[in-house]
Image (cartoon, rainbow, N blue to C red):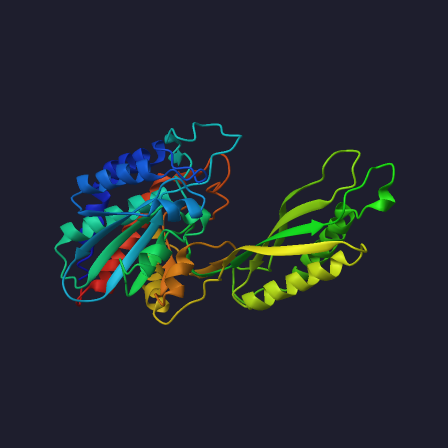
Amino acid sequence: MDKTSDLAALIDTDSAPREAFLAKLVRQPSDNPPGDCAAHARLTAGLLEELGFRVERHEVPAALVAAHGMVSCINLIVRHSFGPGRTIALNAHGDVVPPGEGWSADPYGAEIHEGWMYGRGVAVSKSDICSYAFALKALKQSGLPLRGTIELHITYDEETGGEIGPAWLLAEGITRPDCAIAAGFSYNVVTAHNGCLHLEVTVLGRSAHAAKPETGIDALKAATAVLNALYAERDRLKEQVSAIAGIGAPGLTVGLISGGINTNVVPDKVTLRLDRRITPDENPEAVEAGLRALIAQAVTAVSGARVETRRILLALPLTPLAGSDMLAKALTRRATEVFGEVIGTTGVPLYTDARHYAAAGVPIVLYGAGPRSIEEANAHRADERLPLADLHRATKVVALALADLLGEAI
């Protein structure tokens, strides 16, 4: 007989406290930028302590926080040991993108309409702070014969890259789990995701009066050549589809552009910022070298123009490590049972701070509360939302999978 049936029943009894916990997380803003997230970390720590956990507060040094464009950052760790055995970390982030325009509900209201809770961060990923915490709470109460340690990692810089969240915790030796599960976005278990390269491209010319434009070097004309080359490259990349389901083709977006002095002056400088998504099939160094060469060649279309290209970000793709299949198997098995349909593994075209665990040699997969797809959640868009039924089901899946991973003939 499966002894985890009592564990599932424990989770069912906690639905109202779980919803209240999530609502409190949503109602406390933690927008990043600006990245002043200490207040949310303190609130979360207090809520976790009310659940009976001992919470470690790891404040990132102010200079390091500022260097990464944030105001404050306190990472939280909860550790609960069931005895000797492997350590499994559960990582979710409490920082969120700013709400933006177009909401039909208060972005910080945690309003519930027809079974969906609305609010910034309700799906990405404050719901997983909640589901992971209540999964561990149920495991503690279950009395199941478990061995090993579960850690909750609540970090606050995912929206700026994870360098002072998971990467810092691992680099400082504050934690060293054997494997990890990170915040997810949909029913499926994610085993791979894209990387991302951000480049700043500064095209330099020479200013001149608009009455005598031939005496200058038009940086905008040279930048236009760069843009044309980049958009041609984007069209070419559409045919380069990844072999991993769910990843798709590499993407290339020019997201920012600025330059010029005045309407009647030949522009002497134009700056572009671009985002190049890197699939797990690609070599990140080769991708960057190829883009730099493409840009340098394009600028030669305007005699005398120069270009300076600076890397802003290189986030490596997530690919499965030895051991991640064990996590995926446990999660897909229990998710299939709980949801009553086949739940499998997939890749996603975005990137997350889960890559920092993989870079440290820690096998990791992504799974957490969310509707069937990230689009249904309106993640990073107006009216972000989460079906509360999926919050409860995800909590159950995580708890049952952890019981399998740490169990002794359960």
